Image 1 (cartoon, each protein chain N blue to C red):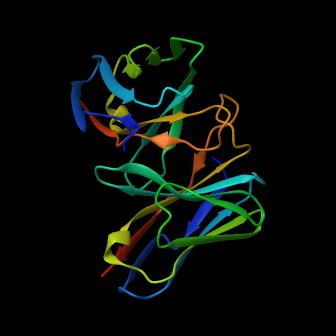
Image 2: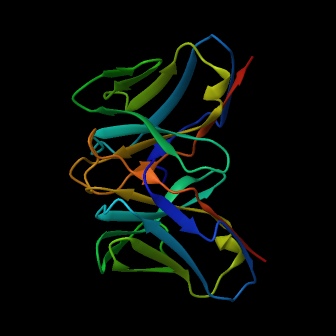
Image 3: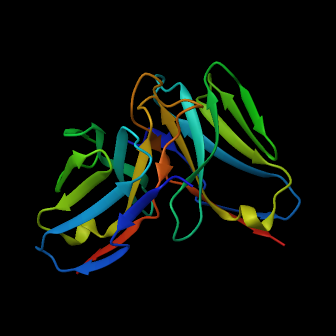
Length: 112
Length: 116
């Protein structure tokens, strides 16, 4: 039972354009959401997060949007850069809990 | 960078042999986690620890055991490795267990395990 889903396994975007990565969840108890970025042969690194009390959080070129009624979140990268090419995982948690549930990941390729 | 190391970084073993992976941290964080990453499954939690000698199961714990005798070390053991346990294993640490903007999980570099 995949509680966090990333339905697009891959995405290709031109440099300078917007990248939009999507994530859906099924567990209505989730109230904290994160995005991690992973380069080959490295561990994932934290990118940005959002609490369910917000619908948007922005950090430089990265913005995460949360639509609680649709149980959907998205990560926007503007403008996309070749160095953004990586696998992106979304993750969710119950804030009173101690575990993260990860999605299957989306591989982003930014073309120069 | 958070001080997390994993050893070995690569291992090839045969079915039926025992394997132990080590995670070592220098951050004095209370929580430690073991994940496996597989194509089509993302990262799945195997076991985690919320203190010395305090551990609990994750979603894919069958065939794995863990031990934590010191704050800095978290060991993952495959008692009798199977080909289905071929994967990349990641250790993670966090200061507390509650996800928040002040408490992210930091990941180690991973161990690639191949079971023939």
